Length: 395
Image (cartoon, rainbow, N blue to C red; front, side, top):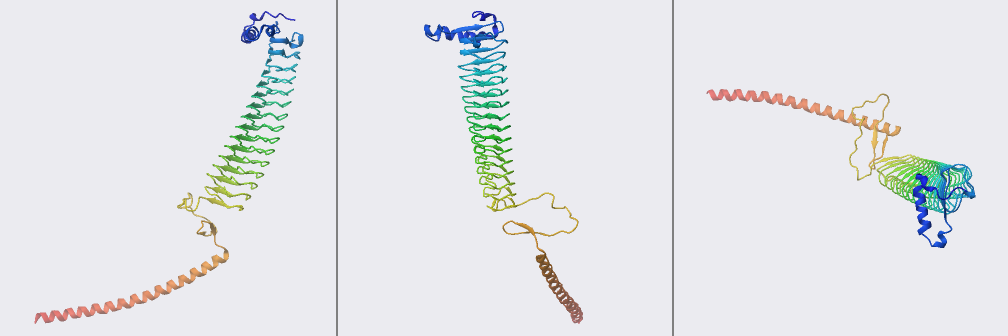
């Protein structure tokens, strides 16, 4: 076996050896300290504990271990660091792994470039590479999946084959097994996801109940909270689309937007509590309006009694070519055009009114002409009277 006293010639491992030596010399009783040793070899492999590298000199170097039994199955692996009981215990040829914590990366055999920090983090990983697990139980069940990042106690703890997931927060993506390309940030975000892919959840309990849903985006506490299998939804705001179950391609932006929608699809709601009355309707557009339960294909903008004036650019001063219809508006704000029957009735009524108006104008014209004649006659009579008065004045 390599020498067990030459560690001073390797500056890169001084810190680790200093800690290990101090622990062995001063951190335990003399009887326990006597069982510990320090290992250093020419390949820059360093260990502090009871036994090292299975009793053989590793074929390659730069492995560092601290624990009772340091990497007992190591053969040709290099550049690994294992700190804690059974950390990297099964590793044989995996390179550039870092394991800190009891049983961290304990089952890893050939996986490379994994980072596990916390008790049982990446414990069952065997061949998966480029994973990062920080927190007790993070990525514990991962076996062959690669490119995952788990930061938080229990984050991605059930993942086995899902790749390229990012989980930040306690129990985030904790039940995910084979789903890939998910991003969960927040306590229990995407906590029930199993095989769903391409989801993004940001906020405590966001997309918590989603199991196989795909391509959903939830931003805000409990956004898309109850979603099960709905795909392609976007929810931004606390409780936005909170009770959606199977609805697809909905967009709810604002606190509690589309909160009670369960099976409706293709809805768009913008504003606080917008579309809150919708449950199963589809293809609605609700802007600053709560909507009407059960309806589909409706556009509602604003709230009666709140908005009292409406301005629409691009209408005034813009001429239309071809056939056109007048737009009518009901008292409840509904817009539409007149039906054919209504249009004919309207034309008939308009024609009758026009005839009556013309007749009235003719009568007034006749009266005006008669009055004009009377005025002319009276004017002549006044002139005659003036002449008579003038003659009398001369006498």
